[in-house]
Image (cartoon, rainbow over all chains, first blue to last red; front, top):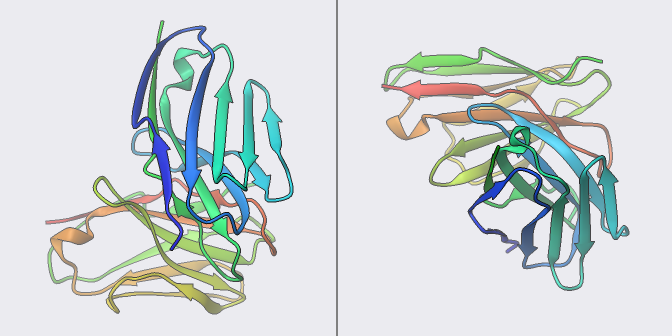
Length: 113
Length: 112
């Protein structure tokens, strides 16, 4: 059974710091991995999608990497800003047809000015 | 291009009642999935519909049901509401294949 873990559960950093959020999954047979952002009480905003054949994806100050063989992904946020404060969720789509996203519990990030 | 639209945004219901939530996917997306989010359990998959057919179902009781219409809009229904059904219900849409999932703003259901 696929399980997704995100460590740490919470993180506080000063503005301007570069940071890394971690995501690990137990079964390397995945189609893709997706990173989301969630603001309190709101829906999920898709940040990056990495297909299983890819090693990384970049969007602006965000860079996500995928090491399928070790079951790990990282989300790198450069030059953090207070507006980056949110919960970041990692989700994998397992490699069997017709399967749903499996989510980690998220990392709640707080960036202070 | 409009995003995923969920209605209503907030609902308060009494135990034992039933509720229907609605989701309009991004135009052209034929897959609609529903998830329940609670502080204790996180995000859990309810079901997925594709071209009006339920393609996958999570581990929830039969009180939770759904359907999809020919225009890809989807509804989920929860009957005989329990206090534990209080949660944020999220809908996601995607195009065919293993493509990016886009979520709506969710419906916050409170059962009292």
